[in-house]
Length: 474
Image (tube, rainbow, N blue to C red):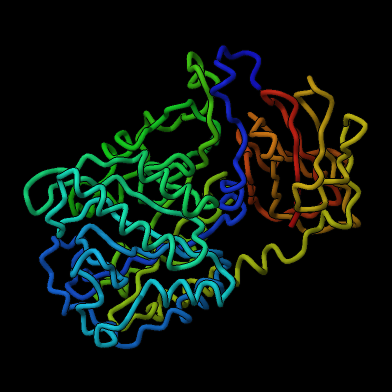
């Protein structure tokens, strides 16, 4: 695909798989961290918590889903088992689970209630299953991998379609003082067999961790990375190793700012599609703590993260922790509503729909008019070798413009390396209002409102001819 690079063509996968496309187009989904920690006021349990502490008296997963949908969130990942080993479903393989808790007199199944609510509400459901288990006596032995696969099988066969299986890199000691050697390939094969449409994130081949939990992002985010980049052991090495609150404020290391430039790829033998996901919490902690009710992130802060992730070729995974009632707290719900209301209002009217869209070149088959439709069915493409192009959007009159959205046609990979956005002034001259490097799945440029009747997008450099699927002006 990239003619300036020397690589083994058998190791090149520069476009997303169908399962990756599902997650790419979701853009924004949620975490719900919920376990015994919610009731012990801890972030990490040690596995010795009695099952009796888990007792949400007003659990209402429909309330969770309604709150998520108000923000435009399209999926929910539940922490079915965190490091403490407590299972939110009645597992046949451990006593450390809801069947021995007061919740619904031991007859409850949180995973079922949440998965059913997601299906009913029209959003997707995903599972988090911590490989580290501080309760299981098998942890640190070969038998533990059998145990883990048995629990994974329960989750993948009893709760309908799963859109993602989320693994973090935590690997500490178990009750016997030993650390586990995880059989990642076995886990992956089981997921592919039982839920072939599910992506495997973060210690997995499908979705890549952004590298921090603070909501920090890269100005240039590439989805095409070297083959073998950040295998599970590498992710584990960079992941949180203790309940250190400062880790949740850590930003991306300077050495990890560039993950996809030509210089970074030089010398690698293969390329792989590994889109980034940014996971962060609406609160300082991942689990609910009443002491943080006045520390919920502001709507402005959440929107800033949304712009930099959803608008910067990353997926946003936002954690909203249920409280001891089993509800999303009122403050969190209000933030989600405010966030969604702003996004819906801002992007309600795409001025490009009624515009005349042209380009200074096309291949004769894929004209710029295709950019009006937010779909991968059609796209704009210049001739091969035309790596610099200008797309002009002539509006149906003078409008105040403050946002431009650009999407590459990622079924044919990520190609653009630099671009600029101009608006036409009343005197006919052009003023640059935004510029950047990568686009990928989506780039949202926000700038000061300006009255104009024409917007111009200049692709100033691309690895091969740029192929765009959509532009929006708001």
